[in-house]
Image (cartoon, rainbow, N blue to C red; front, side, top):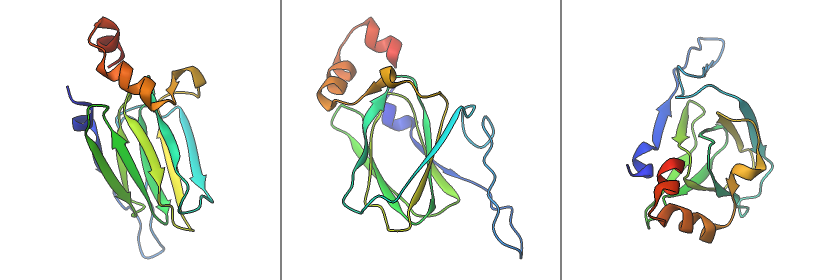
Length: 146
């Protein structure tokens, strides 16, 4: 299966009223996994590129809860998609083994990241050449990763 076909936009229901907006995101309900870790990125200049890695085990949902940013994803087979995150009730789901780069942050950007794993530096692939080798190897090990 093409890993890019697994990426999808998620729309969260605004449960707010005349007092303001309220967005609720629940694991295994609004996103396709149990949430194990939450972190957010803010204070990045517009020319900063964050991410620049793939994960062997972690799946992500990214939501720009304030401001805007862009996310470039690559599948290692020459395909890429750029998402503009600029609405606090919209996110994108990123499966494991997809290369991600977050960039073009607005001054007020707060990018919320939800993931299904606790932090483990060993599951990160931070070198794009290594990522390409893993994705394009044609053996059992690659099938097990994907």
